[in-house]
Image 1 (cartoon, rainbow, N blue to C red):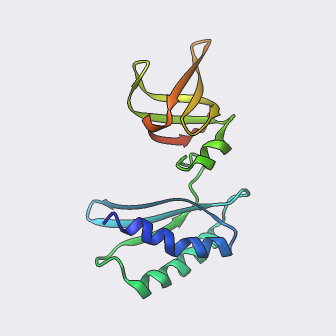
Image 2 (image 1 turned 90 degrees about the horizontal axis):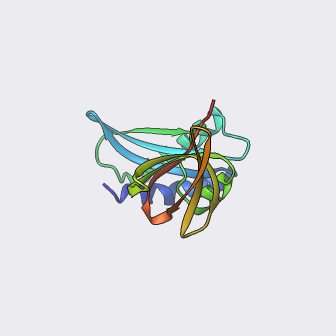
Length: 155
């Protein structure tokens, strides 16, 4: 099953390039008894439902031709939303100065979940400025310890 996402990426990238869209993420997951193939796309000004529909149609045609998934599944193409995942190096670079939510594989300073402003990022580590009561604290997290990362919406 893990071969599905790289294949879908190979199929969808030319479609997205032709539409000036960016691939954010691909998920192939089972929820209950159903399988879902989710493709998240974006562009600087945001994507609309028509663009998602067009990507879905074109990708669906390619998937029907190749038929790489032997069972029934639901194809969903959408925007990653306000709390978009940070996966690639460029995602983290674009997020510098923004609020982020980070989960780590193992505790750092006794914590595994961090939320705050991404102050800096390079290939080895990232620095988050968190607010504990009224005190600002900077936490340095090695990139190889990051389990999940996403933008965080603050109110």
